[in-house]
Length: 257
Image (cartoon, rainbow, N blue to C red):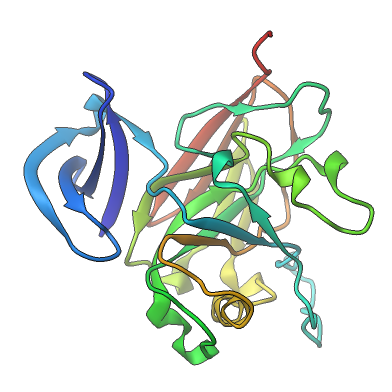
C-alpha cells in the first residue's frame, strides 16, 4: 500500500491519501493507528505531492555501503556513526533544494528510508521487522565543508531543504529486489543493491532501540551507496527505488535578501 500527502492545487489544503492506479483516495486518521477512507479522490495532476509523512525524528547512519567489488569489514564498528537531521530540513518531491549562500560543495545521497510504525525499546534484531511500518526514498543532502574535524556531521546535513522525502510511503517492498539509485542531470551515478550495506536494517533498528525509544513516524536513513557527487544550483537529482517511485528535486541558489 502506498500512502501519500499532498496539497490540493485548487485551494492548498493538505490531505492524506492512499494511491491506487494513479488515483489518490483521501483518508483521515493516524496512518500508524486507526484511519479510514473519506470517500473523496483526486488525480495526480490535481495535487502537489508533499513528503509522505511528517517525521517524528530523522536519524541517519554514515558510511554504510561498500562499493561493488569491495569486501565488507570483518568487524562491525563498536559505535556506528549516527546523526540527526532536523524535521525542518524535510521537503517533498519536486520541491527545490536550496544551495546555501557561500556553500561551495553540496552532495546528493540517495537512500532507502525506513519508517518506524510502533514504539520500539530494547528489541532484538530478529524482532526488528515487526516495528517497520514501511519505506520511502530520502536524499540525504550534505554540505561537507560543515563537517566537524572530529567527525560530527549534524551541521552539514541540517540546512533547510536538505532532506527530500518521497514520493510515497510504501508498506510492502521486497527488499531482496531493491536497488538504491540516483540520476544526476540524467546520468546514472548511484545503483546498488542492499547486499552492499554494512550494517543491516535490523541491526540499525535494534541498536538504536537500545539507546533511545523509537517512536511511530521515526525515519531511519539506512545509508547511501557509492557514487554520490557534488551539485550546484540549476541541476536535477532523481533518487529512485523501484516499488516506491522517483524522488525528483532541482537545486536552486538562495533567494536574494
